[in-house]
Image (tube, rainbow, N blue to C red; front, side, top):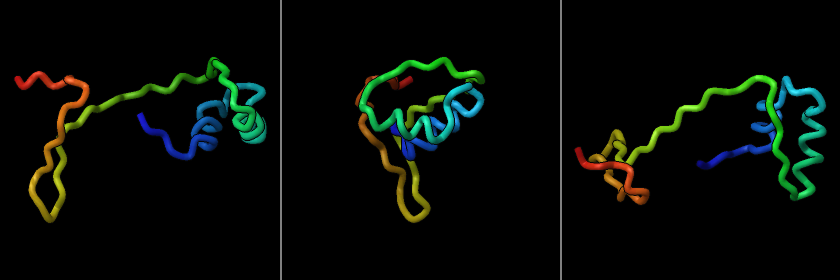
Length: 73
């Protein structure tokens, strides 16, 4: 999974978790260490694995299933 704008994303995830302001997130992200944090409000996630896509001005583009998740049925 690719995540962009990590400081903003972490700040949003922890917005209701005491002790995790945008400033404290920014400071923590500079130390290079890992820390597991229980968030106050869980966020439901939905992952989609796509091996094909279409573009308006061209044909469908098929990609290799590099994780072997598509069984072909």
